[in-house]
Image (cartoon, rainbow, N blue to C red; front, side):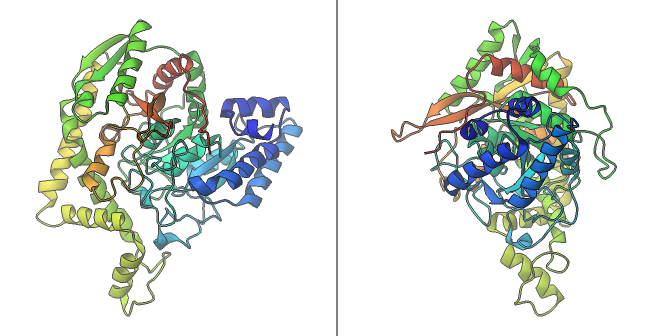
Length: 496
């Protein structure tokens, strides 16, 4: 029974809790036991406050025994990326500069999950300050892919995707700045959703690039992501960019499985550099939608060719500004070699920021400097407007969802791209545009590729669906329809 509890969906866990077939404590304990036995090879978790988690689970059991569950998520474990604040717990962003920082407050998404009775537990590994595509930039550990531990899980929410894929938690929250939920979800064979910008409050999320960051769910099924999205969405007075639009019944939309009338297939996402196994799997998904009566329309998004340079100018510029608060003076680690105020700032950041963070902060500072702002940052923002307009035209012309790959290749080997930053940045080639345009997009499994080397291991392939602004409900319905007709959903990686 214990092993079975680590392979079920959020929806099934909710059903069993409601039926009295298991308890929240038993459900959490099963996952904690699996983490204890399996995470040494995955390294998805940076920390777990077991006593706090068990207390939350016991409180949930007491509510259910009294006939007062708070929601369908009451008693369901949910783990968090280590850039989301939980009061009284360490918030390190996988960086040495915040290694000893303890959050004094809850993020809004955490408060919402707590109000729904979810059992919040665990700090999940990530690329430092969410800057990376492989989860190799953490200051504390390199997370591996549960399907093949010689490979990366994706990034920056690598711990979130790997923990769900390994059966360590039924669901997790991550953050997505340029694909950081969807790309690791694709590599790990789970479902990951980046909501419309502003659909979910960013209050309590350690900022990387404020105009791009968005919190979203990672889970084993589309319905599970929908259940979490319903809870964490909504207007928040603490976040001026959050949207006041009513929260829809996303789980009902997922269960309805309504097919889109028109599916857009962008030519730019199927050009040179796409792995043949990925291409075949994604086009097979398009063929499936066509067989169900959907129109497959070939479209063009011409400006997305400039998405990566625009993204790495905008994101690094905002990172340079956001990370200036980590100065060694207020709440970050301070260099013991500092002799004056300037030394504190320079030496603390020099000692405790990792190489990738330093690189992006320097790049961002350069693009914001006098004489270069208009040439780089200003032009990148104009490109961003053109990218948004490309998508607007496609949806205005009747396209309901846009179908594409998540990444150019399946998960690559650990260390394979660390010395080639351009190749690493191209890992997010297909995901960045949704962040620049503020659109909802999700990843779901659509097949497997054979790992090279004759190991016999299978590597998940992810399919990306992108929707209209605030179009999460039809997006989830379209994804759930595909998921229901294929055997990829809900699989847990065979840890060996």
